[in-house]
Length: 394
Image 1 (cartoon, rainbow, N blue to C red):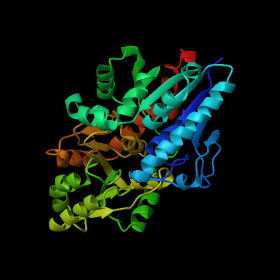
Image 2: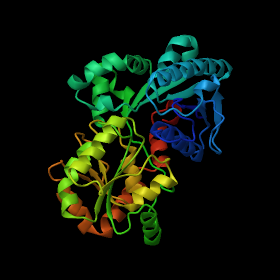
Image 3: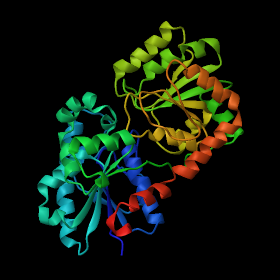
Image 4: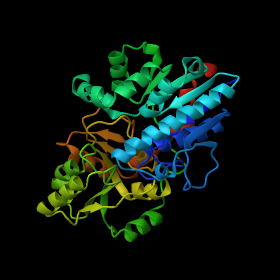
């Protein structure tokens, strides 16, 4: 008999996922895949009156109503909300473990949640759970000499959380190596794993549909380079404008479009100011923040390519979403992330050359991109990879 799996929502935004909630999307899709594989699984998530319609197995963790609204800021209220939710979650988990007659899997995705659980729930009860932690923190991808000061200052909770885990899942090889070395963990307890993509939601659209979408956005006849991600220095929208300047000036039909929540208004102003200074204000377009799913898929489909420029990133869900939509990806970042066929790596110096390569490839590269998603990144495959590290599934 397999252990029951509890997928732990972070409390950042409610599940089903809302805007700027990549980790919540992971919890949602992973749960669906476990259900498909016949696992007994349940999501624990923050209480809310605004949850989208769903058929997911969700149990709510009650918190005061002031903390239940969707929160995409990173201020004091955000941190307080994390603490309040994590404390309430710990008591919920304590009740669950007292009632469970069999050992269960508790799969955490957030440092606050696991840290408070480790401090507020007795060791006797904790032993009734196999504790899994997926690290979504891109800082662990950086060279340890660069990351260590920030890790010590801001992520001491995560360090403690990983130490009390039975298995830590890392989303890229650099993360795996750094976590293992920094915490001196047994190599078998740190497992590299991918994130996945819902290939039914993120899918190629017809040429007619794409034309209509472009027309509705005022982009008819344009060749779009798309960047998806919150607007801030790490994601690099400003670097994108500077990097793509030669291409945009050479080709008046080319447009750089970026979409995502504005984390830094000052940074967004810098992006637009630079575009104006370069006389590219008509070719640099902000498409606002959109919800994950069908709405975002429409934007992937209008692009000739998406571009990925993060200074650091744990995985890059936007890359596999783009591949699944049939849109090739240019990775122009200081990262070793590689998503397979349909993903081209480049430096900022040769990005224009690689974009030309994508344009000249015609439909073939789009077909390759979609096949990569279907072969390597379905959530059913990823859930199966998780199963292999849960003790009842070995």
